[in-house]
Amino acid sequence: MFKRINRLAIELPDPKHADPNAAAAVQELLGGRFGEMSTLNNYMFQSFNFRQKKKLKPFYDIVASITAEEFGHVELVTNTINLILSGSTRPGAPDTTPLHVAKDVRNTYHFIANAQTAVVGDSMGKSWAGDYVFNSGNLVVDLLHNFFLEIGARTHKMRVYEMTDHPTAREMIGYLLVRGGTHILAYAKALEMATGVDVTKLLPVPNLDNRAFHAARKFEDLGLGRILYTWSDNDYRDINLIWRGNHPDGKPLEVIEGTPKGAPIPDLPDLPEEFAPGISQEDFMAIVRRLQQSAGI
Image (cartoon, rainbow, N blue to C red; front, side, top):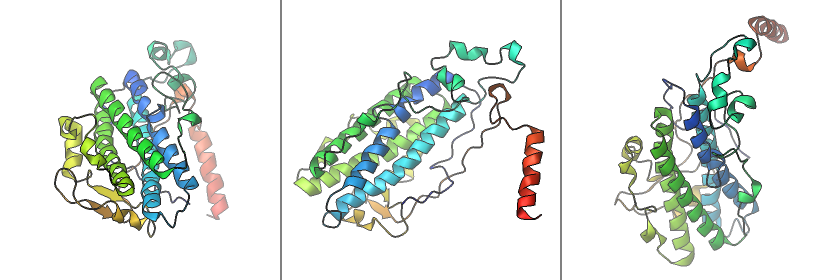
């Protein structure tokens, strides 16, 4: 089972301006083949389908705990897209074409279908697909795939970072470059434990330190590249049998039981020009009265 916490992985800066085309590019990091929807579902189904969970518990715990973190990454990228889209349009009467700017952006679906929020698709508008999930049932093959998947995700984050200087996008990407690097190392260490091959000698891939990205430096300084969380109050503690020793930077690796502190979830304002959420002040007051009646107030 999953326990949901109403917090975001990190605090995202409030955008000073909208950039719908940047939001379209960031969509790749959500619903692309190497996006967070793919990392989440690959690890989730591998953990659900994992054979000999007790006998191979440290490996199961690694995949299962990273699964839980990926839920938060999907949430983080989605909120980033939503914030980047905020302020794209202004309210107005229908005949004034209040959504006219949308016809000139790369992803009109953001405006037509989702009321200026994220879609479950990539930067070109293609929907995320279940056949992006790889689950062979063979432990070493799946770990090797996950290592490759995280490297592909890292590559795409680096490229999208270079495509936009939007502060909200860069804050999110800087964080995920660090956390993704942690997951790459985790799967490399799991492969070494399973096979005896030191896969960490391949790292980093691509061969560029996270500190080359200004937005990633503060997360590196916080040690987030050396920490794995259990994402559980009591379970998945055996990740410490794999996540041990030193990071390639020479500093010790650390397992933290539980979750990070997190930050507030952005509260998106209404968009009258999108009829979203479609609750007028009169509707709201009527809802308040019904809630009060229900509570006996």
